[in-house]
Amino acid sequence: MSTAAGAIVAPVARSPFEHFLLVNLPIDTRAPQVVEHLSAPGTTPLTETVLSFCFPDALHEQPSPTGEEYTFALTASDGARQYGFCCTLPAQRSSPVITCVCLLSYHMWAGYFHQIHLWLRECLASRPPCHHVLLEHLLRSGCPRPGQAPSMPPAAGLSGLRSPLQPPRNNSIPPPVRPRSGAPALHDRAVACLFRALDTERLLYLFTALLCERRIVFTSKHLTHLSQCVHAAEALLWPFRWQQVFVPILPDTMMSYCAAPMPFLVGLPSALLPQLEALPLERLIVVSLDHNRTGAFQEDVDLVPARLLNKLKQRLDQCAGAAAAGSVALCFREFFLALFLRYRGFFAPTAGGFRFEQAAFIAQQSKDTRPFLEAFCGSQMFERWIAEREHDLEQGRPTHDHFHRELDTYVDDSASYQSYSVKLQNATNKLLGSVMSKYKRAKEKYVGGPESTPATPAGRNVSTTASSSAGGATLQRHGSSPAVTANRQRQQLASVATLRNATSVSSGLQRGASPRPPPPSGSHRRRLPTSLATAKTPEQLYQQRREEYRARRRSQQPVPRRVFPAAERVTCNRPDAVMQMAVDDPLERISFGRLHCSLAPGRAPADNVLFE
Image (cartoon, rainbow, N blue to C red; front, side, top):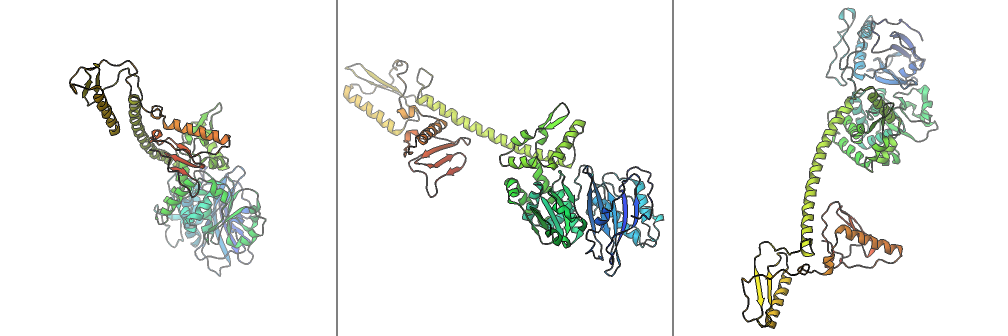
């Protein structure tokens, strides 16, 4: 690799980029050649594979009148990534060479390097080229602060420009600034680009494949579109990060990576699809960005909770006509916010620091979410993310990134819903308590209570005396219960009339007579039929019917048709009580209180089974 200029000595140790490459691709030979190479001090030497990434499809590369801008990634053995920001210069179709400008950096600052590429195009088009002045100025300035744009170089050194360099526009998308700490590494513009390439259903298929760490290949004939969508696919997993093989642009010299028996996320130019089909591939998902097609595995879709997927689909459908690109990325972040809402409460202190109690965290989740969490918590992206959280706790550093700030807001919204649920539950318990207290008082009054004397009904002060001159016997009644039915009143009046005729009452009814002494203890209680006197609660009836049904099943005896008399009618208004009564057939089960009814096909519950 030839070098036209030596290393630039920068006064600061940290620099926004490590290497600058100017590479030409002759149309006749199709062999990339390095025209210029500038590097910052203390950087590692380059490898020959970088040239393959600058022109990933060297055999089919054609000059573009507008140029293309794309990004690739080099992953080290320790997982560190070095990003290459490439930009092809505009050229005519008849041009003998294609020129590519490449900046290698460990920082994924898409908007920052996009602005530098705009300046480099102007500097390289000047006569003589003045891009060295711009590069030296950027290296001396060092890394910008979060939210800061690259500083403008001095105008004195930029001679030969056709027009002065335009300052960065903060209202551009993506903004030409360094992202703030803890924010998503990629701007929402790339996510919106993926959202336009795939419809909602296929985007959800891709999301489930990413969660399950499948082998995914993106294809497109436009390198700009391809690299943006591959980076956006990884951004859908934020705050997690894809820990497997990640190659946004795969050159033709590295096609063997697609046959590796491991998960990967790669982007492949459409011209290389015939070479991909010739490889021995197994369980590979191909995403065609130009034709809105993607594959999926049914087991992945079934594993992810349907409740969360349906909610995500509804949110994405609402964002279909939205102008804000950030709303698309927010929909996917809410998916993880709902899953890991209270994960911070499951870090237990140990002798060496902190440990995340994964089993306890999964156990407190809903039943439909546990299978997915068991699989997702075993992925490398989750293990790496939890290890970073445990390290922060050991160092005493609180985690205040963008995701956790949204998590606090999401918890506040959930707390307001929980407060409403608690109030509703308290009102329900109060109503149930009132009903149960009335039921107990009525049962003590009509079946028998702890008092030794009968209680006088309120609102009644009527005394009736029937006496007999022959026997000297006197019959006296002090009022009646307000809940006595008309039938019972007619029976009592008939009994008084019969007694009056049998004893030949001489003086008739005597009002105002002194009451009789109370009868002996126990003899004053009103007697009810045995079925009502031994009435049971709904839960006791359910247990009794359940034991009877089990006993018949054990003895292999058919379940007879049972008629519940009116005396055994029960009242059940408790929402947490589930009553299942066996009627006529074991397949017929009626469940009250939870809106569930399971009957044999084409049949209805027996009409002689009555619940009030």
